[in-house]
Amino acid sequence: MVTAFASAHAAALAVLGALTTSASCVAADGAAPPVGEWNFRALLDGKPIGQHRFSVTAKTSAQGDERKVLSEASFAVKFLGITAYRYRHTATEEWRGDCLTALFSTTDDDGKSSSVRTEADGDALSVKAGSTVQLLKGCVMSFAYWNPAIQTQTRLLNAQTGKAESVQVSRIGGGSVEVRGQPVAATQFRITGPAQPIDVWYSAQGDWIGLDSLVAGGRRLSYRLQ
Image (cartoon, rainbow, N blue to C red; front, side, top):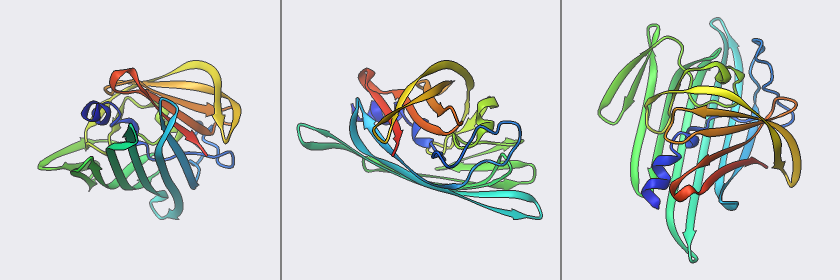
């Protein structure tokens, strides 16, 4: 289960950014993305396995609005009371507007270590993952759900693998997601293209409040804002 679990939710673990009720991402009309500090609870089939914490800070420079994203995920999956799988992922991203300008991530996937480093190279982004280096042209976004511009993207960079994923983002419908013990009406968007579709939930105010993705054996990985 361990290997399949890790590979199936790699894109979901590239989550860099989130919103609380005080930071709205509804501004898809070009307003600046939100800033703040947030904490998501990670669950596997409804059972807690860890957390994903991160912060988004902003500054204005001569080049325009810039943001820095810090992310830290820590998971432990237990079987019969014994820890069967551990996962650690940290990442730092720098943004200018809706475009990624730099990224550095490290991952410990149950003892297997990896890293990804990116930097601006002219009008492109140089991405190094292990011994592989690639150049991505144009404006590149990661799986940054905090940024409303993600809803119109057809390519997203996976911060864990360094792979540029071809994606399609579509609005599915409505439903309810539990936030801090209370049901909240939400709109569901689905990202297809990674190994497994990723369902992302936004509140009526446009705040990102949840994420769901199937992993090994049909089990469900979920993020819920806490």
